[in-house]
Length: 578
Image (cartoon, rainbow, N blue to C red; front, side, top):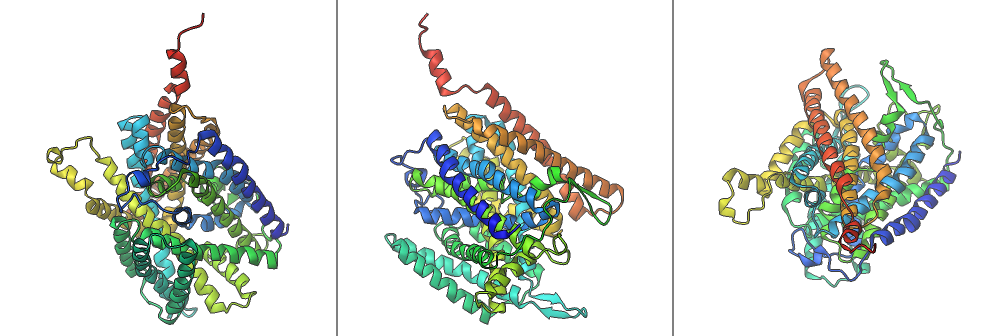
């Protein structure tokens, strides 16, 4: 099969999903263009900041387009490209985009509250506390996986073929550019703050010029640090990103990053169009795969939790309801931000699969390369066909790959801090009556520090050891969020039936996957091959996730089955005609 045909089919399917199904959801649930959004109603210059559609879209897309759409499809390609493509498209259109849009919609309609607080409003405090704890544990896994991934990418030293130390120019140059992003983004944010009426076209031109300047400087002055040293630098950055105002760091950084990521996607798409390589991966390799060590991987549930962000991701709902909902200026922007950003991410997942197919060997994924190396080298090869020098193409792709993870990291650090604070939230308005320990837990600096501390401990085991548990927890979170959204829709008289099939499927998939992960870690301890830092911490987190998942599911489903719609309540109030 030619990759160009697959790309065209995927593009048409995603565009049709946005124009038809996305608009159907917006019309069915109801969009009020004249309504005052939470961003305007509660504008505080910190979290609630009314922003243009492009700014909010940039934040949403940059935050959700993490490592998942690159990593997942390439790892899952071991089962064959057909099941991967089908799950990407079907999941992206009917699962992921619906969840992202639904979470954003529910939050905007509820004063910008997070999904956890919405669950408390419609389900109860117990459900909210269970859900907040689940979210907080999940953010630790994201911080661990992505921090380890970024620090490995930035590592300025590698081993040469003879075992001696060698400099990694690509990673070091990308690290310099990424660090520049932080300071340039803050300067860009200050300029925007004092020139609120700046034309969008002017902002775009300034952003592109800054990107080119940062890229040139990074190529000229690479920073050489080890991976452990980068872990510390990243943690310091995440602390700052978690506590600084949205307009000062995260929004301008995401705005700048979006143009870089779009450049990467455009490069991949045009490369595929020009080169239109044949899909060298096997179409289907069977329902069960056997590894060299004799272990088995089953297409169910492995495929569905391995391809997470490109199809459906619970993390996206935390971004939709945790940060993006507080910056939407007009409700009509929600469709593009919620549904549209997810559709674009699914396209990125399809491109990753096609790039992998272009470099496949004997119908299989190259065994000697990581997913990021496969994607980076593949797209860099496409860019070279346009006359881009090899070193420039490789640094650009390395920078893009690291940006995918970094833009998710700063969002998840902020969301993790908020989830920790929500655990100890109280209805008491008199602060003098709140115990000292509770005040401490509600403090944003303490909440950030404790979140990053445990995230750092988990990242010491390496992202590869955390990814399986992260994928399972991510999809389980999606299932729980879908239930919460369904309760909100039903309680407010809106149609929720389109969420029932996705939520049931995701519950079955994720509980199966997380139980298998738990069993695998237990067996590792029995065999004497486990370590506490890797298997022990995962075992503890997996146990908590299973228990919390059951508690949240039972609480939400019980409420969903017992919730009467507003129309039903009105019918009961009306006098009988008999």
